[in-house]
Image 1 (cartoon, rainbow, N blue to C red):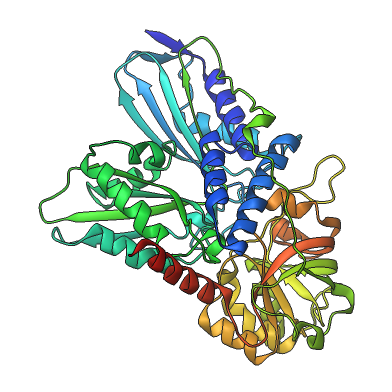
Image 2: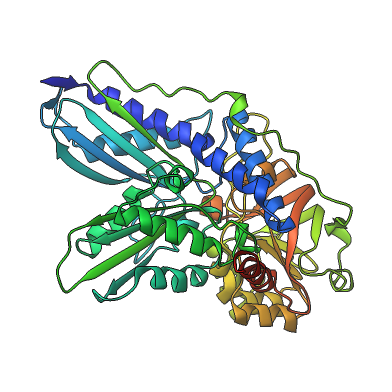
Length: 506
């Protein structure tokens, strides 16, 4: 019989969450660098470079890889011969306490993103608890924990289907992945759960994402199980879709595909697919009664030496003198470096703004969108000498329903976010002669270094959803939709899908 101290378990959870907030798994870094080296799409290669640079900077600065520091998912396997020293707390209680400590750490505070009453008030819990915890009793005398922090952008792209027994899983995946858009921040991983019941398939898919990237090793095997053969087929065929990094078109959309299956009813074939984003964050540890877990810091040698290059065609933009005449010269796919002031706003702020517009009420003092850009972001709180914490873009499609009134009534001329926009929004952008710019999802700490001043100008009570005014210097973005409605998230994948087909077929 092994006795595990509750405090050892709680502190291990805390340390693990802090660790993964700024350390990518080494296998992810290696796989992304391999993809970077072979990538032929300039836009995708540039995005990968920013993600790799951000990864190293975050590790060195001990600050989050992404501003969305995730919802915590924890798989706990408890040995049958384990006892807890006091037995006064449940495993859920202990995990939640570890989460609270991790997310309120004064040296590296993590953004609280969890809301209560999801169908109603959606009030933030303030400490990112509760976590989603799965407990399994197993043989043995120890406790094994697999823990992840999952961003909303990738979690929201999860897909479920109840296939007929004769239906083709590969066909469903290949039809579904393009519909997911780029809000899950590829390149990442796909976790696919098959069988059991629908909730079992979802758990299998999430658990699969905890496994290390090993697709290259798998390719070198001479024989494969059914799951392994499916992984290889999906890995190659998903990458042949040409979606590429950040949905810009390219050779690599997924770094690996994971599959876990369970027996199911003869009439059923439940399938769940869950993507992991470029801010893949998970770690495993074991407790044997001898103390808390220890997490070895990664050496600086773990990251490749990469310098981000803007290229000769980069356009420098002064946001403080910008007009519609200026943005009319920008072309989709062009790289810009932004300097000057811009405003921020996410879902909650957009809702309040559009309500004010509908009621013909003035916007809050300090909020003037005339000839301005709005950046879709909810930053992490600043520490020490930081102006702002990691401040990468959030998924832009969530703001689509607010775009028409914003462009029609506020004087706004551009938006900055991540991933694609809906077709109706693209038409609205074209109608008003505006633009949509894309920043790289998964490069939040890198982006924050371009922000030189930050202040809240409205809705401070919304926390990270408040409206900020940022003063930026050389903030890198790509013109995703220009004033003519040209859209790189359509043209990029189309071009690269054809290129890949011509390359792989004789």
